Image 1 (spheres, rainbow, N blue to C red):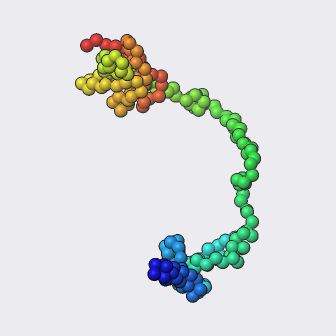
Image 2 (tube, rainbow, N blue to C red):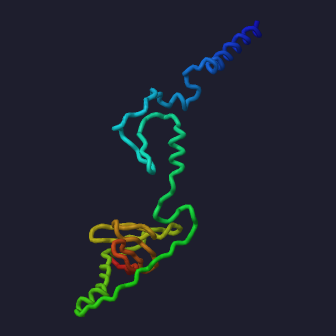
Image 3 (tube, rainbow, N blue to C red):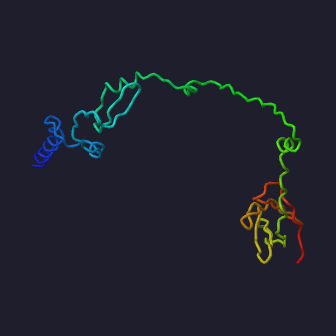
Length: 193
């Protein structure tokens, strides 16, 4: 009895799987086909529709998803007509360095401005005061820094007041880099107070 029931189930499963192959059913057989929208077959477009130009031929833009081998062959026969470097060939480009043109200048003031740029402005002094240490034995070095009424606690590599980076902490001073003005770090000595 069990064998008969399993045989009926096997016949139904076989029919469900293989009969649509012979009858040409339009139900999708995979999730990719189920997700693809089904578009009705569109006739060839009339003149006046949007056109796409490939090479010397003009192709009409359509939503027909069928593979057109004639269009594919036409696009494969289009020669490469680039006017730059071929990206598929490994070669070193020759760099052409333009030679400076000699200028005739009679005004010494203007000549000084052309060939000698104005000096770079030095960074202003950092307004922070090194007040003392904030760490205990066994912890990373941390210090107190004061700017007016504001007091900051920072370690090496941290940024204080959104502008000043603590570079190095020593026993009697700290080196701080101004992040706005590039230049060497400034040393601030330990103050009493």
